Amino acid sequence: MQLHSRMQSVVETVFGHGKDLNALQMCCRALVLFFVALVLVRVAGMRAFGRRSSFDTVILVGLGAVMTRAIYGASPAIPVIAASAVLVILHRVIGMLTAMSPRFERLIKGSSQVVFHDGEMETTTMQRSGITPADLDEAARSKAQASSRRDVREIHLETDGELTVL
Image 1 (spheres, rainbow, N blue to C red):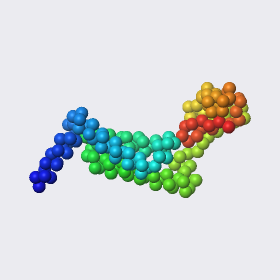
Image 2: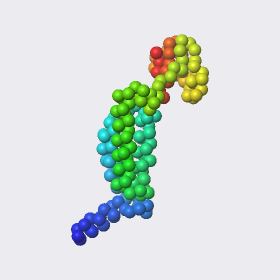
Image 3: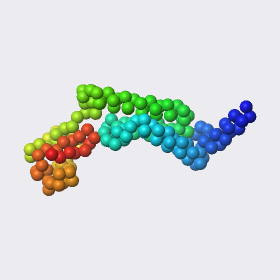
Image 4: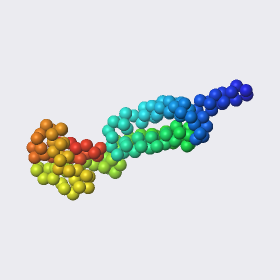
């Protein structure tokens, strides 16, 4: 019993309790949560952090918002880790479902949109997406080594916000 009490005291000294934490305690919490996050990223798969689609951004924002609560003591660590695991598992399951169903994939991720085709700009789509003619020219230069949009056949706005050029 005394060993348990002593261990509890050491843990509280190292990690603190509640919101009244010093810099060293917050650093120790951040260190542990870094490795917890690393495990969660491995569970989520590299795809979750590689494509930067809106679907994938949700997991990044959610994990960041939830996990910081344990670092600065606003929430206990175990519930924070559990909530983070739920977000990662949900993301993984939805990702697997989108791989099996094109309709579900379109619902979750959206679809690419043509913003330029055969010399014509799709101004409604461009305005809704905040894309300018200069953005199209930049995409033509950087992606197709063309001098302007007039030198390419099509430009698409992809679900991850990238412009692709044909």
